[in-house]
Length: 177
Image (cartoon, rainbow, N blue to C red; front, side):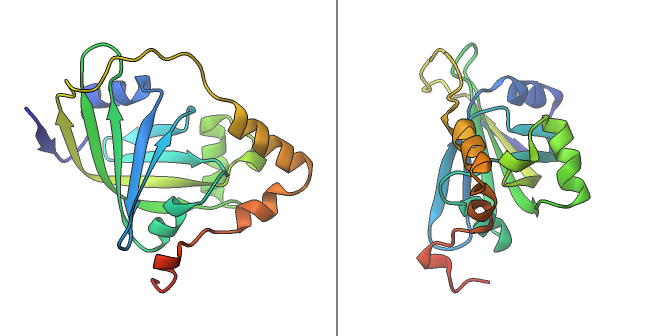
């Protein structure tokens, strides 16, 4: 049976820390963007706030939707052990490079400045927990290193900063402010 509440519990926080994959959904217009996220890129700051490390890669809809005051849902689900789904309904703040917060978050994640596009602070206004009994049991094998390797190579070639500066704005959202 599902339930909704206002803040993360200690059990929720422990559950989030154990997950190797989560989903980030966002919207600020007609389209809903949904992306799977791996790596060790999420931290719980307190019972109503998280920070997400955004690596450069394909489009940056998360940035576009945060800039447009869009809505965000983060979904964590168990692939091992007891079934469970945890949804976090949030608003986002962008933390861009060259700010004190940006450098503080680099320390939290122990990541190189050059390979981080930006950070997002997610303010949770609702938490929803449900059973997850239909989610398959799957075994975690390893991280894919291709994205980090690509970012490091782009940085070494002097092309990463220009890439990170380009903010993808989908055609359907170009008129939104």
